[in-house]
Length: 220
Ligand code: CA
Image 1 (cartoon, helix red, strand yellow):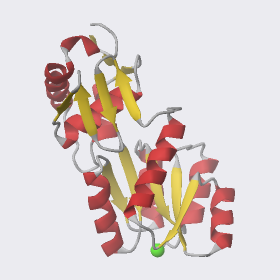
Image 2 (cartoon, protein in one colour; image 1 turned 90 degrees about the vertical axis):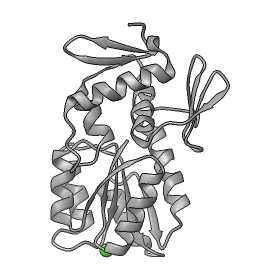
Image 3 (cartoon, helix red, strand yellow; image 1 turned 45 degrees about the horizontal axis):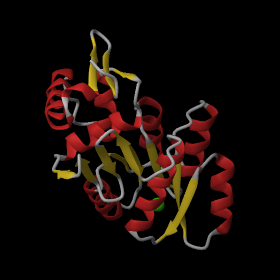
């Protein structure tokens, strides 16, 4: 999962990025409304965390512009504590959820997970196919009853695949959703990770569609 964090408080932005990354997300950051609006329009994010008080363009205007351009990415807005009108304005502008500052990182993670679950129509906190279980709350992967250790990238890739069973996913698409903006991986890297995952979860869970990409949950 790849997130965009738009926050002008640099210390807060840095600590949130670190916490979100250790929770298994790839995170791009912008520190003003202009940069945030641009990234949100040009890159593919699974969700956005958007501060409302931003330099250059306000968070509300950024959100209104995205929605006016039919960009429906799930957005959590960060509001000043107890500013009820900011919450109302945020929802009117198209926010999916809000969080009043200051907040605990665990609350942000829980809201983010709930939001992504709604976006993917997923009802349980664990993704499962045959003997493979991925528990998002615990960031744990279990194969036939045995806990497996994955690297951060392997975990992100597996989670993304498990959220999109039966769908053809190109290498470029996978790259966009598991890497951060600066990383710019070449598509061979995705192939390497896919092959590593196959060794871990079993060859027959990830099929190759020649010239198109990969399909999770269908026999090759
Ligand atoms: Ca701010």
